[in-house]
Length: 565
Image (cartoon, rainbow, N blue to C red):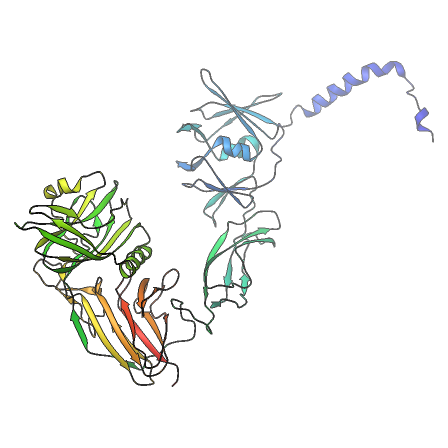
């Protein structure tokens, strides 16, 4: 068939055919709605957070969604853009907002509930709450996109969130890691993701996953999953604690070599010597400027403060020395360490102890009669919830008053301290003068049994007693600020451990002059977890120096485990 040669039989009717067909098309389509949104992808958002998830990837809104009655309000412009639309603002009386999305053109006004769809025929939608402007950002009820542009929209109860662009409820990511995890050994992951609508899991997206972690430490591993209909879950992150190889522990490692079971408790002779401890920890939370604690010292003293800020303005904590005598006094700061400002109490304690142990650089101040001076070498500003900490060993040639002072960062403390009030104790934490603050222990390990030495338990190791009236308690629970010097002589090679008894713990100790973080990274999460301190050589004296760290639970015990039994 040669169709190329076919010609119309009635050529004279051709000019009238196009108008007739056009009329027929208009008649047949006159009642059809305007084209609806035909995009793809899913946006997940929640009230009170700027973070949203777009096809499983994090994005940020310029302002968080919020509730107006029963309806959640969302920023119009960024969500319209993510859905493939445009928003135009036309100034006038009133101002006009035009939204173009999915082939539809909608017009509304700030403060209005009415939305007009422009097209061959005008259509009107009434919103449940009006369009709002807040902080220069236009907000609409999230249902606006569904009612006006037919964008799928749903509440996602399992995720405490809302879905836009797809009403398919996302899957829930979940996985577990077989414990314990050791450096250099394979890690077994088990994925237990679920979909609330029963859709199969089609894809996994991992971050930070390693089949073997070569070094001990803490690692974050994150999983997202996608279901068969294309919806991504929110990410699920787990902190994986990788323990050192049990065959080769390093000082500060969490012990992974099995349970330690001491069969005896050492109760060696204890010598309590050293200076008084001026201890300032009450009120622990500083809410106003004032004197935190005050006492007089002569000769040697240890000064200790630990305070958190609970005030909208920034504060500093000062240690002042005031010479109220008629003679000139020399005051030497023999050793000092400072921590903070930080909300991480374990970091604060470690910073101060590391400086205190390792950075002894004595400095001397000369105080004339009536003169005051700031003793703490650094005085950083701290804001709400941050902790400030300091330990100072001082020696004076005469009597001086020591004041722990909380002051606004803007205050001139040497001019204003005398006018500040003496702040009341909080009734929970300690302040006062306790001591003596040095505890010396001689321990001979002659047997083959695993033994323990308990520290700061108030029973086998007594708490420091109060030395002066006005203390918040008759003794200092936990012995924070006391310096323990434990001299150990083992008869055979012996592994030494520090074991927190009660719970969260992170500190720094000296083992034969070597600084050891306990644990090496992070903090001990539960009581009974041993931390390896090192191997003590047979018949060689070793010294362990320990100060109970602020922010940690006491008591602790030292465990000594002979290698040959």
